[in-house]
Image 1 (spheres, one colour):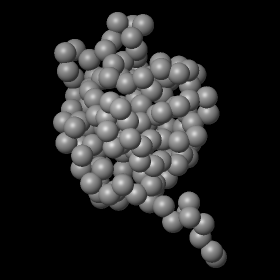
Image 2 (tube, rainbow, N blue to C red):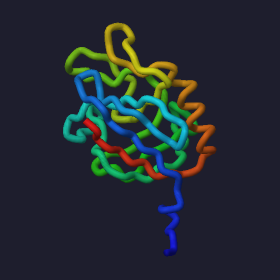
Image 3 (cartoon, rainbow, N blue to C red):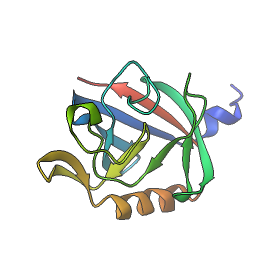
Image 4 (spheres, helix red, strand yellow):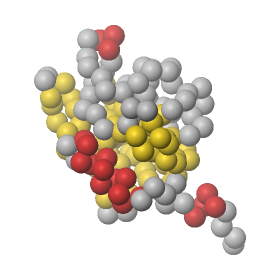
Length: 147
């Protein structure tokens, strides 16, 4: 069988394990590398207030004015500029919770509580390690709801 370029890409999988107003919690897996992910709660894929739908996405490097060289989740229906970056919170603002994302995927070495809200922790170092492991290579992202 002949592999297409997309089939040859590394695969990163996020297993979403819990949803609440505090965000969509997951475990991100890339071979032996694992970390925690945190996204906004599911709000019908609405821009700036919802996580993206489960599915398979192509991801490549993008230069962001705010985050610099960072991974960009491409071709998300009805959405633009879904990035994978550092941050702690992904709560529902309408419920009085804090957020560091408008729909992007946050990563952290630990999950826990920060200022009374669910959070991912040690995020910057986790994102740097993730970026270093992939070395700027494009990859396929699979998001699976495992709850």
